[in-house]
Length: 323
Image (cartoon, rainbow, N blue to C red; front, side):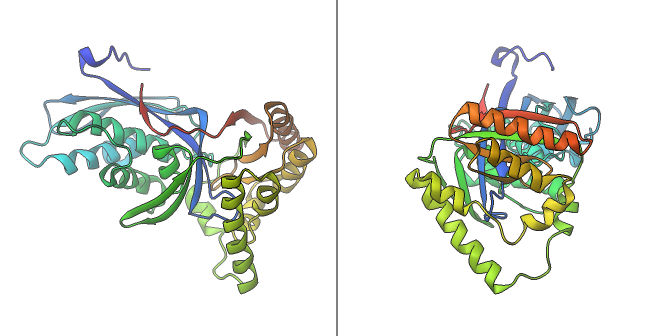
């Protein structure tokens, strides 16, 4: 990690949490932030224009160092353009600490983009109080996410930026509804060591959907939100089922269905594929049940010859914030 001695030296550090997206029937629309893990971007102004990446840690050398190809720097550059114009446009130096595995289904690219946009906002916001709900920050983060995802998908960006559970209602312009679930639950996330890119996962999607499956998903999506808002575990357990996308994406993850069943047997009450995969998530009433569910899923993946990384956490009410 780069030495960032604080504001006295001009550095700003912003953390953006990981997120679980799609969330059952909520393809491209539902996402929630999770505690403890995420990405951090450090930034400071420089006299030369443009954004320069000074270091990236935690990625094993896999991420591009060119500013025009990296999600964090693209988002930061977009933020710069929104608050200044040539020749007054300042430049930035950024350093990225990756706390999330790449192509995991936990919003890795979105977290970097969000942290980059918010860090730039802190530095060039023209004296304005930093407001992560502002359209400018949201749009800058989407610009960064587009580099990795190939489109302006907000189901990871929104919860990483805002925290809580977010329903994405549109991206042009950004529109969302955010709430903190009344259902208090613990979250198990298990990432088997295989790589599924967002683009590859999108290629697995069906070209058409039957009316019966569409109606089932509409019903499940509405019921899932109601269950979370009312704190009704049984409603959430019944409704966190996807009839459209997840059946196709689960085929890309060896042991996915067995892992889901094992989590339920171990004490989880719902779960599925996070984002594009390969991460699987499960919801449980307490930390012990979540830990048992995580262990059960990891055991299934081990039986498939896959090592995995497990985390037991909770839904995070906070989104991106300065550290």
